[in-house]
Image 1 (cartoon, one colour):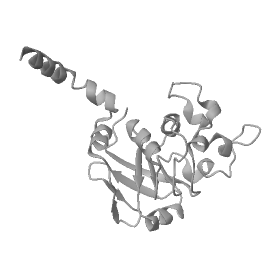
Image 2 (cartoon, rainbow, N blue to C red):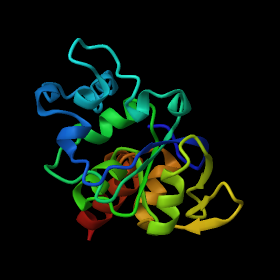
Image 3 (cartoon, one colour):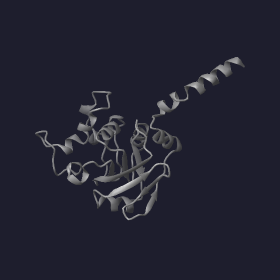
Length: 193
């Protein structure tokens, strides 16, 4: 995974509430454990027309969303069934941060374990961001702060371990494996006693 320390990006906006994991990536695309290539299926049924072409009216297909690494979404983003494919698809789509007033707990956990920062901010802040797609935000993971377009800053909560993993660019298993020598030394000392 690529470390996430600071990110400056314009936003893409999906204002609808209750976007569930089946909407993020429909179940029929869950036939692989490979992460690469899942971005083409992200929001598939809403992003594409029946003939398979991109729907220019879908917010993520609009010019102001092109290249955006931050998604601002409506309340209760990522609800529904647990599927790691949902954050995988968003990451493969090029997103690194999701901001909403409410993010489903299981989605948030899966996102953070895979390098996708899921942030909850106050409703007034999110509503203002949703009203201005394409605005530039600065996300500072070290300080747990989002710098807003008006120059103000909004703090966000982030579990210390998830923060460490994001900053180091590792998932929880990668963090543990990086400490293999310490674990071996501990086990050897323990057996010696």
